[in-house]
Image 1: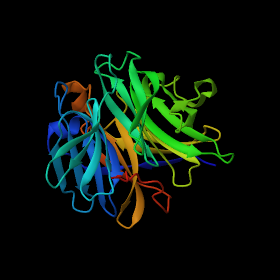
Image 2: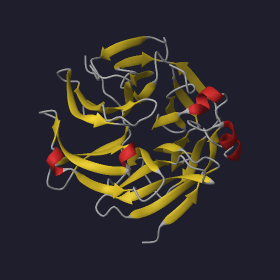
Image 3: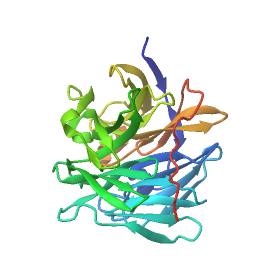
Image 4: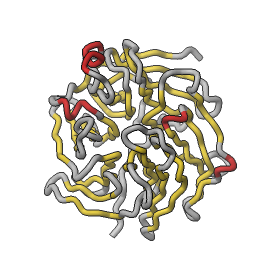
Length: 323
């Protein structure tokens, strides 16, 4: 099969430098609507925001959050999101602006880590932490929180910058967690036991290895048929465009590329319904760019949109709240 290449176009140029600094975590909210987070409103900022974008009009609403959000998923309550910010996971109501803590106790006894990326599996939140700002110390945790009994399990304790995740059951009935710790430059998988709250690290497998390249894998989603992964590539260098790539789950082979002109640091992918068809939304960042580099990459921090061949959105996370 030939590798397809598609150039993305700018969907949104956020109105402020704060919102362009570190956009991530887009999720579909139905036709022509998506949420995303500005993880941090600048290099020294201690807060970020939840944003909701109307893809058809370009109107973006923003709510400042109590800390730096690593993820924000829509829930079964209209306008309410489950958010991981700093070392808390809570519910944020966009109607009232109310924040209520669901659970804490994350990375106790460890300094300088914050919650980063996550995935929903059934009633569980699986999320990881990063050592900020350098992402060079393996001290962050990878966690599973089970809503049914409100138990928090630490799956790993060695994360430098925990990023994209996906959960799949294979044909033999084995549940797998696909995971990225960005500085390793690898996409790996582990057998996951959500009842015991553990990973079988002895069966860790490398699916994609990007160590020969300058790029770092960041956010990640499954294709609708669960046969491939789409991963955003964060490039700290100076290429003319950034990229997201699609890799086969079975062979690790490269299948497709989407490029973002003038924006090398692609952070997260998501499939959305836009203009009546399934398209790929990509967030990009300004983070760690000096002024002269920003001048070379005028589209850094923009949200991009690209065509795909998909006919469905596949898995779109909604966290169903239990009383």
